[in-house]
Every structure is written in structure tokens, then in C-alpha cells.
Image (cartoon, rainbow, N blue to C red):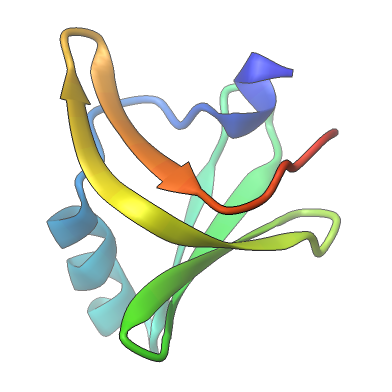
Length: 79
């Protein structure tokens, strides 16, 4: 389940925003498992949609950890 949610690298909210701006409002990243997570502006915040179409909103961005960055969402996404 973890690799379904993990994107390689250290992707911050600023990185997501820049990628979305450069790609028509959406930023898509490939997960360690090989699926995709697509980020898009949603009101004043950001939404994330997995390859199955499940969508959540980022509630806390940029929780910096020694092994990467966590973006907390308001829903559970299962593979």
C-alpha cells in the first residue's frame, strides 16, 4: 500500500505548483508502484487524483522528513 502513494524524489508543494503551471494546470507524477498521482489546483488548495480516479485534498503540505516530503490528504486511497 505504501508504494502506491510514494513518488521518488523530494517533491515539495512549490515543485508541484511549478510543474502544474508548466503543464496546463496539472502535475502528474509516477509512483514507486508504477501508478500515477495527478495534482491540480482546487479552490485555495490542491487536489490529488490517483490512477483509479480517487480524489483527495491536500490538508497539510510539506511535512519535511529525513527521507522525503509528506503531503497529508483528507482521504484514504487504496490500490
